[in-house]
Length: 467
Image (cartoon, rainbow, N blue to C red; front, side, top):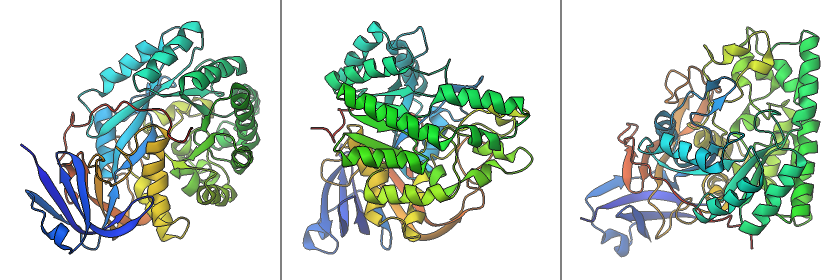
C-alpha cells in the first residue's frame, strides 16, 4: 500500500533555494515539487493534505553532535535515546548523530554495539553514530577501517580530559594517518587538557571553587593552541579535520587561516556559544553550574566573531553538543569544586528555533539557517541528499515552520528530560508546527504523534566535501 501526502501553499526553503511550492510525499520519500497553484501541483491527489500557507516548509534538522545516555563524571546524561529524540522532534530535528564510546582497554566494536543496544527500538527519529576513540593501538586502527566500511565514518578524539578520553599527539597522528587512508573524518575536541589540569589544580588550591572558574581555567588561548596543533597534525597526516564546539574567536582565527591555505579543515559551533556567555557561568547561588560545558562559555565579545565565522563559512555547522545533566543531584555534584560539575548543556530541542531567531535578528539569511543546520551537517557526515534537503528522492523529513509564532523557552514547557533550560525566559519568533520523519507525522500541529522505534539507524558514506 503506497501512502501519499501533499503539503500545499508553503515557502519551501533549502540551502540553495526559496520557492513557493507544493511538496508530494510518497512512501516516505519526497516524490516531487511543483509551483503552488500550477496544473501539475493541482493534479496531485493524496490521502493526507497539509496546509502550509504562510509557513515555511524546511528540511528536518540534522544535529550532528549529541550525547544521549553518556556516562560522564560519575553520572549519566539525563536524556535517553527515547526522551532525547522525542525532544529533538519537537524542535524540528529529524536526524541525530550520537557518539558511541570506546572505553580504554576495550574495542571500538564493543563500544559501538553498546550504543546500538541503547538506541535500537527507542528513537522517535532517525539516528547515526560517530565513534569516540579513547585508546589508539594497532587493533583500534584496524577496526577504524571496518567501521568506515559499515557506515560509521567519523571518529572523535580528545585533546582534553586526561585520564578519561585523552589522546596524546602521537595517538592523534596515528588515527589521522589511518583516516587519511580509509576516508574517515577525525573530529577533534581541541583544548589543551594537560595544561588545563594544571590551572584547575592551582585554582582549587587558591579556594576558587565556584562554577565561573570553570571558564577561567579553560582559557581561550588553550583552545586556540590545541586547534592550531590539531590542524598541523592533520596536515602532516594528509587528513581532513573537523573541530567540534568551537567557542573562542582565537580558535576561529586558526580555522580561517587553515582554510585560507586550502586545507580540508572544518569547524562547528553550538547555540550556547552564540547566545550565552561567561555572565551565565557567574550566576550566583551555584546557578552558574547549569552552564558548565567544555569548551566553556566565553565572554560576550566572542559571539560576534562566531557569527562572522558562520557568515564567511569559516564555521560550517551548528550542532548542539546536547549533553544534559539535571541541576538537582547531577550538576550539584560539583558544589565546592567546579571540576566535579558534569560538563554539558541541554539544547537538542532549541537549536532550530534559536537559529531562526538569528535570521530574525539579521545574523544569517534563511538559506544559511538551513545550510548550517540541515544541509551541511548531512553532507559533512555522508547523508546528503537522503537527509538535509527537500528534493525528489530525499527522505521525507519535513518541518512545517511558523515564522510568526512567538514562544518563550522554559523548562516548564520543553520536552528534554532535564530540570532546567539553558535559555529560560528567552523570547523567540518562530516555532515548529508539524514534523514528518520519512513521511510519518511525528509532531502534528504541536502534538506529539510519533512513537519510540520509528527512528531507524542510518549508515553513512564518507564526508562529501572531500575529493
